[in-house]
Length: 346
Image: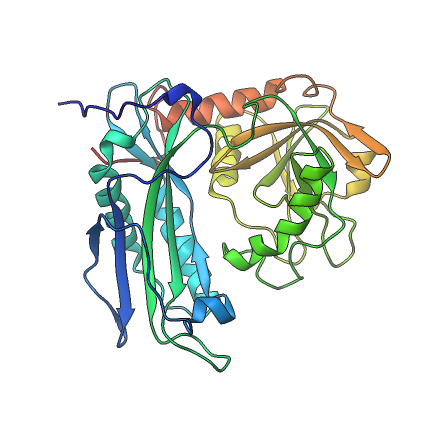
């Protein structure tokens, strides 16, 4: 029996938080996670000495749930989110939330909020945000003695205003992550570092920044919230790699690389020099991630110099369009899932 959906204007949702019926919560203390479960309380009460406030012990994930063409509710590759959050927690000396429990918790909280999962064809989705924080008291520099794991869910529309209209980027004057630092994990501290640069970009009329590697400032890395994809003149999908392991391993990016290979599109994963981009080596550019899937980039500005992507300047280019339509088709059930990526919730 189909779930009756909430009375929302699904086609005009913004990418913004609104409370739903349930969240999920679990606590770690005395060396173990409790059994956890659903809660209707969307607040967290902590001591003023909680580790999150002083030493930024926080990691998070982002994935989405969809209503398929057949009416089922599904999530996309939650096993990879569980794995990445496990790695992120270990990097910050936090007790990883068990991977199997992570997937079960996602299933439980999404199923409980089925009425909030946007209907098929609306262009919206249910954003799922698992996060973990150091909640125990700690005053010296050390890992917190206790932790909270939560999952909130909220229905969202497009990440960038304008949906699939090509956006403009600028080269960031700040660095996103240090070489061999925490750029390859999903920790809140990385995003805090990007806020000043992001707001400067917005004030100057740009949608986002493009960060170059902080070691030499010659290689393309990523933006504040998404990985970068490029298309060469011969149609090859070029995926920037980092010399210093400072690019977040995006699940969407990995999925799009496989989709490209399935479609017979050549893929080249390698370090990409900014000089190549400025020299006109690429005809399309896009940003990929859970929130945006793919957002086309029409221009990148470096001071007064403007790099344009001729095949994707006025509208999303043909390669990016094909990749996006194929991946979203797999996610919402319109295209066969040959890789077992789609996890049925209800």
